[in-house]
Length: 356
Image (cartoon, rainbow, N blue to C red; front, side, top):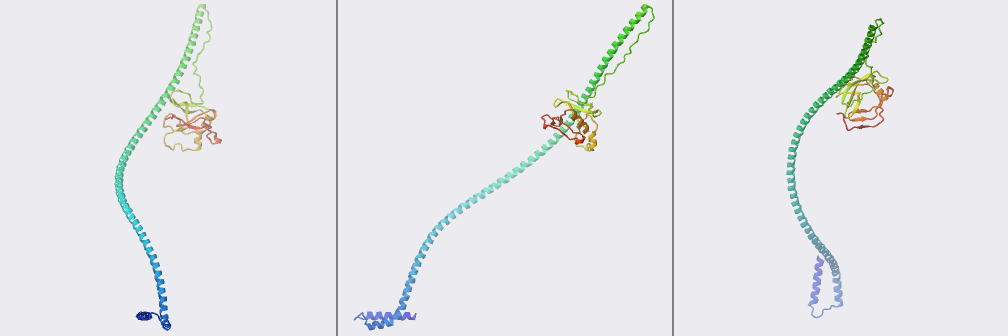
């Protein structure tokens, strides 16, 4: 700072001296040399300093221009950002309004949902009450149905008994008819013999001679010839259930229940019967082979004719099997060595007509 002050004073001095001289503005060579010897060491650093200052000022101006340009760009971007911010604020306001509308809609939906839940709960209670009433009605109907089925079974049993009695009456009528025919024949023969005996007595009396009595013929009433025991159920067209004795080759005579009605036809043999759940058939293999229970026409009778009889039946003749609504066209049971295996060789299918 001291050198700078001296330089400035010197420069001022020399300029002042130069300007103050009215005679000449030119220096002599000695003066110039003296001035150069004095001023050059002082002015040269100052000039260099001015050059640096000018360079820095130029750089400063350049930086200032760039900064000004950047500031302009920033202001432009700021304006764009301000526009975007305004748009965002507007969009935010719209979103807030929509959110408020959605909240109102959500509140309305919640209110309606609560109303619907309340109504559904009321409807559910009403339906539960209706279901309870229906279950009571169904229980009552099932009880009535059970009573009707029991009565129907009783009626069928009574009808079967009536049909059985009708068959017995018919057999008795046939026997009586045959006996009447035999009695009529014996009476005719007896009348013929009496007539012949009268002729002989008349001839003896007229000839007045003794004659040996003619041989008489003793007529005895013969019982009707015994009928052969059938090997299957009879074909009875009427709806009936009878107890029939049959005999098949290889077996002693045994009784079976024969059944017929208008839906499934006649000639059916009931080989197994029971109603409801029971432990009655919890038997040994030998018992199932021989047969179980007493065969009868009552609906609650429990019996099975036996595996051996089933084998003998189905091996001699062609039989169909019906279990409820299911039917097998050709039912065959193997022998003991085969384990009484069922050997049905045709399909089993469901019929449209059920016995029930």
